[in-house]
Length: 488
Image 1: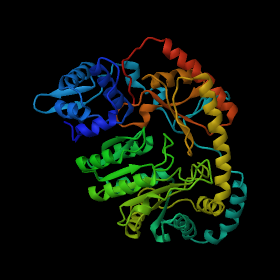
Image 2 (image 1 turned 30 degrees about the vertical axis):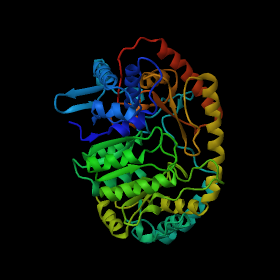
Image 3 (image 1 turned 120 degrees about the vertical axis):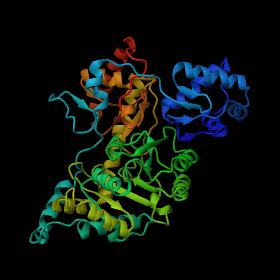
Image 4 (image 1 turned 60 degrees about the vertical axis):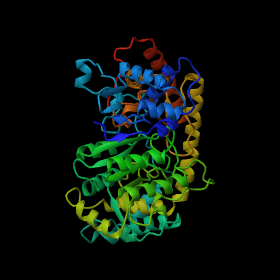
C-alpha cells in the first residue's frame, strides 16, 4: 500500500491550468499520466479524493471520476474499495531474452567497456580526460612523495595537507571548515557507500531525486533502503520533497544541487534554504553530492553557496570528488561533515580499504591549489562541446527537447515517446552508446529521456547525433513490441 499521498491543491499545482482540449477528462488523464511517466508524481502515491481534486481544479467531480476511470483502464492508477486510488505503471510484457540479459540501455559506467572498435562512440560515461596542467601536478606530487614514503602510508582520514586544502575550499565559498571535518575517500562512490553503511539500516526510507545518479541508487538498494523518489525534471519542488520526507519518515535524503546529474539543473538559494529546513523538521540527514559544483560554464556567474552553508545543526553532509573536475583516474573523493561523524567514518572505512593512495592524494592537492586554471579549461571545452551537441540535435533531431545547462557535462533530452530503451539498443548496434532514462530512476519511469554527455570533441558529438538520428528513425518505424519497457 502507498505510504505517500498528494493533496488536491498540490496535484492541481503540478497539473497547472485546466487543459483546453476536449473532452476535459481525457486531457486531465493525459496530464496525470505525463506526471507519472515524467517522474514528478511518484509511483504508489495515493491520489486525492475525486471531490477534492475537482474543487482544486474548478471542474466537476464527474470529470475527475472519468479521468480516474481512464487512468485505471490504462494501468496508471490502481484502486481498492476503502483504500482510495494510487499511481502505478501498466504491467510490462517482455521476452524471455530480455528477462535474462539487460539491454544496452541498462548498461552504464566503465564496468561495461565499449567494443574494441575505434569508430565506436561511447556516450555512456560523462568523464573528461585530464587537464593540461596534469603532468606538472604529477611531477610536483612525485617530488613531494619521499616525505611520506618512510612511514606506513596509511592515513585513514586522508593526508592532512589535502584535507586542509579541501577545507580551505569550503571556507572560500562561505562555509568555515576545519581539516578534521574532512575525510578523504577512494572516490565519491566510496564516500556515499560509507555514508549508507553508517547511517542507513535495511528498511530505512531514503529520499532520492528522480532522475538521479544511478550508482547511488545501487548503493542504497544493496543496503536494503526503501527508496522514496521525488521528481526534479522541472526543477526542485521543495514543498513536495518536504511532504515526502515527513510522510515516509526518511532517514536520509540524497540530492545533487549543483548542475544536477543528469538534468544539469542548479538549485537556487531559496530552495536550498527550504530543503535544509525540511530536512531539519523531518529529522533527516541531507547528503549533498557536489561532484559537479566546480563545472560552471560561465566562471563570471555568481556561485551558489554550498548546501551546508544553510545548515546550523550538522544535518548536511557534503560529498566532493576529483573525478569530474580533475580526472576520473584519480580515485579521490571526500566527505565534509561534523568532526565526530568524521571520526566514525574513518573507523567505518577500515573493512573496505584502510586508506586512499598517497600519490593520488598528492596529485589532487597540487591540482586543487591551481583549481581556477582547471575550472577555466573545463569551462571552455565543455561549453564548446555543449553547443556543438545542441546544434547537432536541433538540426538532426528537431523533435527532441532539452535545456541548455549552465554547468555540468550532459544534456537531458526528452525524445517525445517512451522508447528510450529501444533507442539505446538500436544506437549501440549503430556504434554509439547512450544511457536510457529509466537507469536514472528508481521505478521504471523516464522512458522518454536519454542522457547525452558532451565531454567528447565536437566532431565526435556530431557523428554520435547522426547515428542517433538513424536509430531514432529505426525505432519509430518498428512496431511496439512492449507497451512500456522499463529497466532499472
